[in-house]
Length: 164
Image 1 (cartoon, rainbow, N blue to C red):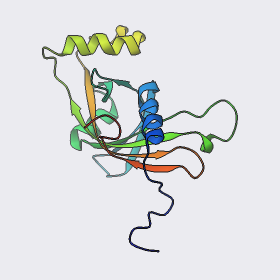
Image 2: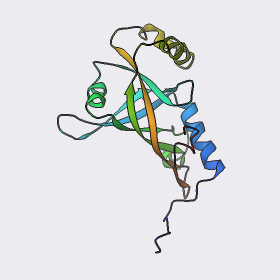
Image 3: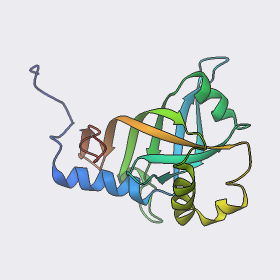
Image 4: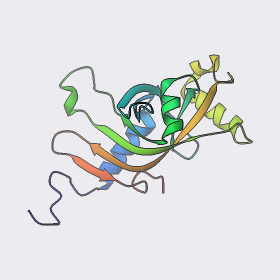
C-alpha cells in the first residue's frame, strides 16, 4: 500500500455529494452520538432533525434530555442519517455520518424565522416548540463519511455538503 492509497474510500464526486446532501435534507430523524459527561462512555439517542435556512442540520432539544446535558459538557458530537428501506439488507442502504460541533441557539431576532422554518419540517413540534426548556441546536459539520452502499465509501468536507 502506498501513502496515497485510501483503501476502500473512493474519490468524492458530484454523485456522492448529491446523495449526502439528499440524506441530510430528507432526514426527519437522526441518531445523535454524544459522550456521557459522568463516565465518558458513548451514548446514542434518536432526535428529530431538520435543516436551518442555510441547510445546516438542527434539532429542537429539551434542557431536561440526557443528551442536552452531554452536549453542554462537550459540544463535539456525531449524527447518523439515512434510514433503511422496508425491504432488503439494511446495510446496503445509504447512510451518512457527520462529525459536528453543537451550538445551542438563543431566542434572538432570528429565532422566530427559525421556529417557523422548523415547524414546516416538524409541524407536530408546535405542541412544545415554545416551552421554556426547549432550545434549537445547530450542528456545525466538520466532516462527513458517506456509505452509499456496498463499495461506495466517501469522505466529505463541509464544502462538499454545501456548508462551507
